[in-house]
Image (cartoon, rainbow, N blue to C red; front, side, top):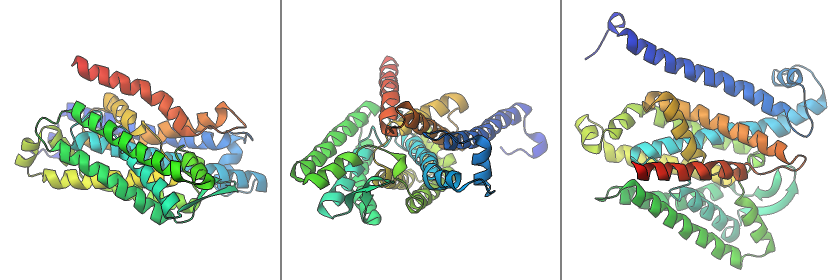
Amino acid sequence: MHFSDGQIPAEYRRYIGWKTTFLITSMGLLAITLVIAISLGAAKIPLTDVIASLLDFPVSRRVDVIVWNIRLPQALAAVVAGAGLSISGTAMQSILRNPLGSPFTLGISHAAAFGAAFSVMMLGGGVMTSTNAGAVNITSPYMTTAAAFIASLIAAGVIVGISRTRGATPEVMVLTGVALGALFTAGTMFLQFFADDIQLAAMVFWTFGDTARASWSELGVITAVVTVSSLYFLTNSWNYNAIDAGDETAKGLGVRVERVRLIGMLLASLVTATIIAFLGIIGFVGLVVPHMARRIIGSDHRFLLPASILGGSLLLLISDTAARLMLAPHILPVSVLTAFMGAPIFIYLIIRGQRR
């Protein structure tokens, strides 16, 4: 049944209005947090100077260099990576109908890391440097991303194949993800065993997810992949709502379930592979944020997907800022902090699922 504007129930208008207000408020909070994150660090910059520099008003060369060359790329990398990992996790949880689905828990992140390590060692895609951007420099970023994507594609194919078998419960799929993660981690260790000192240092350092590695060019590639994939996920929000009701119900509503599932896993794998290829492994964001957003805004993917984007950006930006400040002047990789936060929540979700 369709309603005209005058016939829409007041309760439904309030329902839509509250969720829209929440999303707009989250956008404002993210913008404020971004400015604060740029101002904090070993050299503190007043908020007024940060805003002036971002608006291209003359401040000082020192402030402009710190803002535009160091902190803004890192902060934006945290925003984009958090958005990409979160919306990928939300999409995976829907199309696989698995509340524990995420690039990290299903082994896709470990597969992408193996692909990146393979590119670093076997294809000469990464070298050790001593630049301000970090100790690892990717000489062939597209080759490294392609290798990471192919490896993550293999893991995603296994997960999709198992999800289509009878009796494939969420627990079975998570255990499969654990097995895949262990398999690709073993492959990475195998490569490390035969690597020389420079290759080994590059691969070990690469396992630490760090947004400080992203330069403007790398940030552009990540942003392009995340934006295109997110647009696809957002335009399929109704399809994900239908799949949540069951495959048969979704097919009865005209949803091409297998196609939606396949393309969704492909894009989620591509987003994960791109982020890992440039930034390293950042775990649990794609698992934790969708559940947080679902508790606040509900399971309607029209609002859950954008809420996951904003929530992931906000969580990773705050985590990255905290990681920079905790051991200042030393910088702690953000992946360490997200692992400390995500592991207890992951255990809680497993226990809650077993009680149900």
